[in-house]
Image 1 (spheres, rainbow, N blue to C red):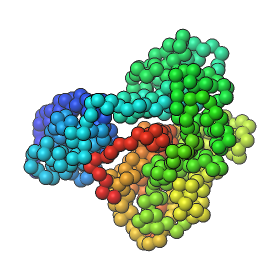
Image 2 (spheres, helix red, strand yellow):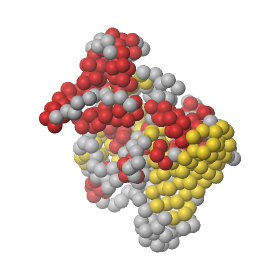
Image 3 (cartoon, one colour):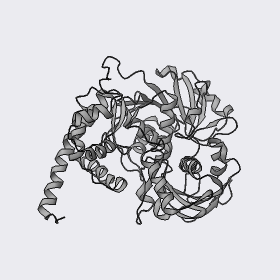
Image 4 (tube, helix red, strand yellow):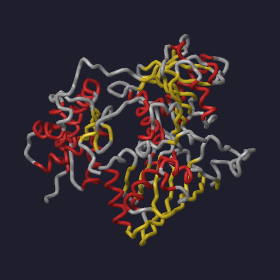
Length: 487
């Protein structure tokens, strides 16, 4: 293969930019008019920049071993515009690889075959359906990220509508609203908000990308009547962590206008702990209080599930290397928890985690099989779980990684398990990753029946995306995903 000249390489890049620019309004139209979310191996292309689209195409080379450019996918996206498609998530990356391998050039005929379930299924009179009201009770780290994701996903077929946030009163309402808006607008870890935010002091409302979000001031759930704000049949997402059992969270259900409560922390007692992708099918219509478990539980359960299904897990130990949280002290001070009173930015802090025991709440077959511990470290975000496992059958690192790579690309766990195979990645590379956990292939160790896996996770953003998926589940927002997963 002859080497391309610099001018040729540069011209090809500009040509691809031009094609990506043409794709953007098509992808937007499919989303807004057909409720079709165009993805690239699970990564949404909606509302993405030209560079991001080109980068996501480049990603295909790493996962499939074949080049895929916008010149390959553009004919598919263009043909999708004329097929009157019904609602679905359509992975144009997987379709692009298959179409390129087929090589017959007839994009419309190929799509009619591959997307037969949704071709000519668009009903313009059906509308987007009835949206589900969502209320965020608390507006801390998780609350603000949930707000960002909900605003980003507003429109199309998402049907989740962020109507209000509930916070404690802080005296000067105008000043408080400006501070809340500023915290949503700027984030030291996740960067600036993608859009515009304005404040309507008179109506006590934040307006984010056209979404009017009422700010309700209350010191307890009992003080709030949501119907007074036009909110009804809402799901209240409690991200305060103050109440974690049915009795405490039941305070939300006693409020007018509330249908369900979702906790963004491990639930206690009889509260169902749900890890989306694993046991979300256990959610029943009559379940009014649900927990989204912890960020660590969400990160490790999908990996443990697929490993147990394929290799069997006899027993193991989970060691969590976790970024510090707001529960710890900036400088040494009193704390009711052991060691957590020591300065978080200066120390590695050995502490306990309930994640190992919590696994059994989502995967009962792991009851009594796992132990766990945690080390809090001086980083603000992105954590790691080290899984030290004894398997039922022998394997090696290559076979283990190949299996997990397949699970990340073409299985029902595609949104939960990500996979990276680079000797240079570090924690900041995973800020904003939307998967529950990311397997670091270069760190995998396997010898006979013993295996050690390193799983990164954005304990803020990745976890929040799992919470959103549960919100969609309890709100009966379901998406057909095409082409269908092989496993």
